[in-house]
Image (cartoon, rainbow, N blue to C red; front, side):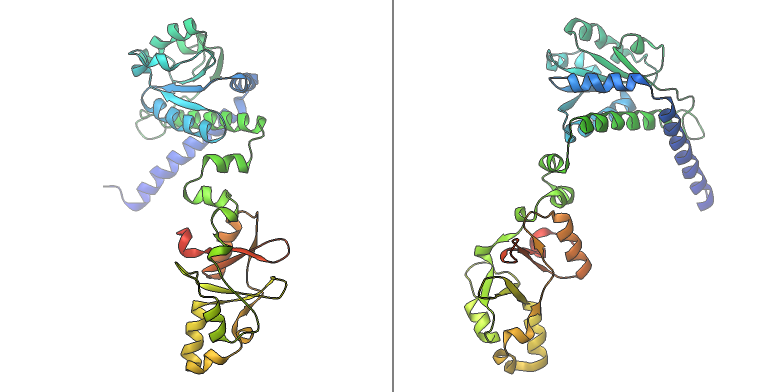
Length: 322
């Protein structure tokens, strides 16, 4: 078995070779890349991505990248295509085919049908290969060797395919002025989607918040702010104009009782509330709210309007973060 130093050397050599292959590809980009972008921008249907074996796996990722950046796309397996899945292709579609050698049998078998359909073909393949000669636009890859001691397993070639495909997808989305708002519409789930969303998408509305006028005792504030159903972990203290004066959290209350006992109930809430608490404004991205919650270790974050009046609250227990 390799020792730690040997394993790290293998890993570093692979990373260096793959990064060098990608860097070399960047230097060889020419007008054919712009032609490919133009074909994709002109596509009124779907961008179909196809490839066999490891190239096909890269193609599946690229189809997902196109779709998530504003270009409708799906993956078509070439072996399945010649057994009926060619029926998925429609008049206004464009196909992107990946093959390092450009000689893959399953890929070449779908070319006559694509020609018959009039489907524009973009390929990422070797110059002069059968696939390249059959394509409308070719992004030529000139990878001479694969990474690793055996120089066999697709690695440098697939790294270049992935990078070229990503470059295509991002160039197309940039041309379409695809922005964060568009990206968020396609990514409503997970932490990424949450960060790109406005805070109002995740806050509890004012109707579910505990609110009381400042100037009360702790006991009065807790009684008057009581609401049915699931309660938030903080009470909003508001001024006469409904602007936020401070908040008083369940944690604040527990600490106060631990220090002062029952006598704390007669304290003025103004003396024990958190004045000028951290907050976000309506329309801000959740990314800022999450940063505040994590940086300050607080659990409740008021959401305010442009006048400083509360409109909701972000409760960390709702967000599943941290």
